Image (cartoon, rainbow, N blue to C red; front, top):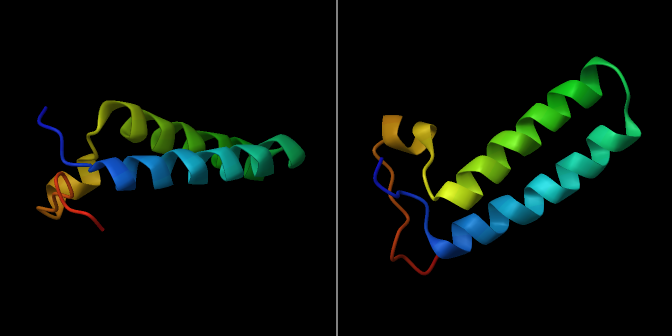
Length: 66
């Protein structure tokens, strides 16, 4: 797996994952589970620097300022 998520993108994903995780914590049930899963996916791509959806769309933000 080659990295396709740039630094600024990774920071934004991490922050967004924290916000969504807080939503998941406050909402039990299906909405909370879905939110927690979404936050997990964002954390995973933020930590690894790889996004499978970016690969499908042939998107690469590595080395780009914005």
